[in-house]
Amino acid sequence: MRGGILRVGGYLVGIGLALGAMPLLTRHLGVGDFGRYITVLSLIAIVGLISDAGLTVVGVREYALRDREGRIRLVRNLVGLRALVALVGTTGATVFAVVVGYSESMVLGTALAGIGLVIGVTQRAYTVPLEAGLRLGLVTAFDLLRQVLTVLAIVTLVAVGGRLVEFLSIPVPVGLVVLAAMAGTMRGRVIVRPSFDREEWRYLTQEALPVAIASTIGSFFYRAAIIMMSLLATAEQTGYFSASFRIIEAIIMVPGLLVAAAFPIAARAAHDDQERLSKTLQRLFDMAVVLGAWTAVGVVLGAGPVIHLVGGHAFDPAEPVLRVQGIALASSYLVAVWAAGLWALREQRALAWANIVGVGTAVGLTAALIPRAGAIGAAVAMTIAEALLATMYAFVLMRRRPHVRPSLRVVPKSLAAATPALALWFTPLPDFVNVLLATAVYYLLLVALRGIPADVMKALRSGWRLPRRAW
Image (cartoon, rainbow, N blue to C red; front, side, top):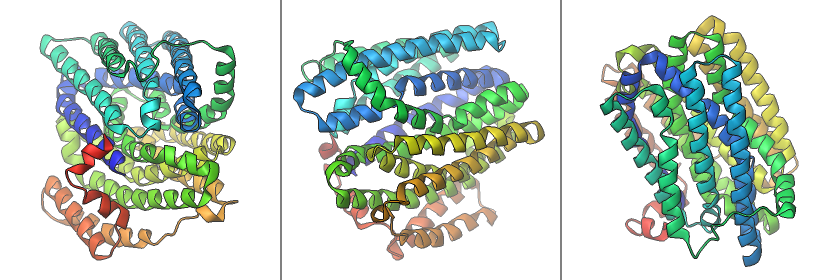
């Protein structure tokens, strides 16, 4: 829990820096070019999901179970395999950009952003030993370094009048610097030379393929919506949805970071201690309910000032889009928890089928609603699909395992606290003030109702020792 809090804290610092640079970027590029910028990044993000191919999940799980020699062999082969898959995926993305008729700057930007992706996935492969060993302070430091360098590059390019292609090339120099920093820091702890062991690659591929299908399809929702917006809607509607998506994309990482901190524990427990697995999932569920409800309330109330900060008045039509997508965040926390349980239990096939149904629903609804409602239609489709995915994950996880069914004691308490917090919508106070008041009301009521799990309170009382222990 301490490590998860540290991870989220570092991530929020990085997001704060990004939010400081984002208004400069949106105003510099304008609605149309900003939509093109997010479209290319979404295309490359899909390649990133494919290049991960479930290897991170499998890598952390295997590292937690192997001996020293097996761990060294695992890391070396993960590096080689992920880099190769990313390179092939980047080539495919560039070809796709040409085939669908993207502009010359978008095609070139796709190729450059893809090169940055290859460098980035190589660096992230070396974090597997750190994540499996719960050394989350170092993981946080490298992630924060990447974010700081990216923001500095954006600010510099805005100052010198950079073009779309130059902004899309930022991941290349940033990735090289972070990779060099990590190689220097980790030398002597992790073998940095990649390996191409055919037997190991075959094993990793066999283990990762079902996970890859599940995780890639499950993360495809929002990126697919961006691509479909670029093909079915106007540049302005794509820009509005892109602004909302950029904010949601930043927030939606938080549940994954929190759950990832506990995943090695869940993976080990699933192997030989079902009682411990049940307790771990119960605590993650309690945390997901509390934080998911608060996040949804905060986004619904604060959509106006956030959109105004990010894009100015030109992006005002994105406010209702963000509010609709904010509702989906409550489901996103539950998706992260149930997915961790299914991955730990090696239920990759069930994950894959659930995700195929969820993505099929999302694509169908998006295709139907975009021509009629534009960005709002895409947001509604994403919200419905996310709720459906959380429901299917829970059903698959618990139908044959009654011991992992969570107690719902925190749900009514969270709803009781969220209702008066959300009622602040009807006050004449500024939206920013309403968000602060809603946060205070929500957590004060939760404390009064004893809705915050005791483990969370104990971890928060650790004070200054929290960062040191997590590091």
